[in-house]
Image (cartoon, rainbow, N blue to C red; front, side, top):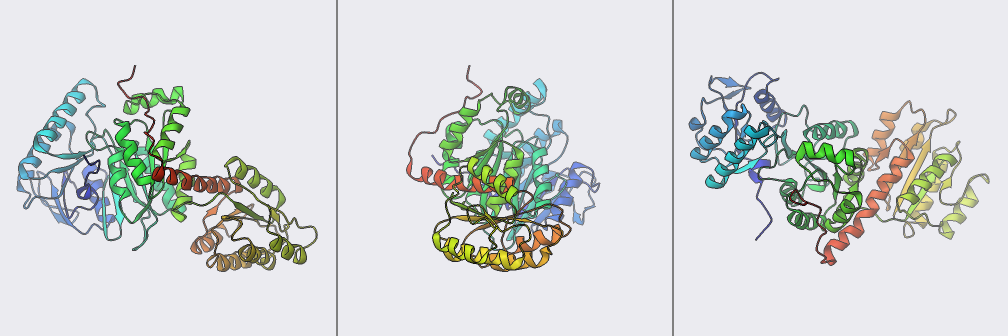
Length: 485
């Protein structure tokens, strides 16, 4: 039996009905209509509202029965006690895919559990596929067919046509989905897809991961997970995706206090760090332990979706930041090997005698574009076989104009045969422009050297995990489930 579910109707429907649509943008139905328009969805939209009339420029119908012809997807945003009848009416109308945003189901006491059971029974009897309930919706900004059905406040940046480095974020927390979108917009992350899983009546994290993992525009998937229903199925899907592209997972509830909170939130059962580590390894997933590191992974894999090797060269113009970067790199499992002899000879011949010709390289604080370019070109010409990546550090002292340095490095990096990451530290009056210039040259930018080294470490973890998913037939280690003692 295949683990795959076809979720095209949820991510790329050709027609959609919004049941409970409204004109007021602060209502759930109005928010969904507004985001649908902001996403530039190009399909047929049918608002459903008993009052009828025009809603956000679309002519509405007064009932589900009046939807003609049937749509690919119905987005339901009405009060919980009316949802079962709406789902039944959708089934009668031939609408088989439902995205239910409101809560009031399994999370809402005995009455909610009864409502949840009735909805599950109806879905089985009428062969419905239901996303949610109790979720914030989903977004899929594939340039070929953009779609959003959500009441999250904003949309992510998306990706350009033809891109293959889009990020997908699948979350068991709607609030974290909102936060991820906000940070993606601040940091220009290529976030294309966002899924708020909600109660997962039928569709869990693994279902969305399986479908998005097949999409050529998605280069990496990021997960926030508190509970998993079927550990073996999740692992099979995760391993299949991880064999082709990175899957990075943040598990909530890894401490006693956090586990208690997760149990209240999603019904999760506590698992200790070692169990989660083993499970992630067995699934081929890169594990992170904080939202900060998940966002760093997004930055890193959004630029290098295939990961990088572990041999790193640090090129700095300041000793202290170079030392901190070296420390963090070592803790992340990176290897800081010696400089190739030919590279060292070039640098000793042309750098000031006070400069440090080692790894890290210290060009000294007064280094300008000529010295940076010398070291950069020496690395590209003599060290491309010895190292897998370069981490550059640029501290901007008062006596040096950073603009020429940034422009020169951007020009060199755009044609470099080796991956480059860059950090700028200190008072940076032109930070926005400098970061944009280097990002435009394909160089991921970081605010400090430790974050840069952490990102490089996460990138270096993926190739070995990917290889293991391809050659290691081991049965995944299961976490404790809800039925464990």
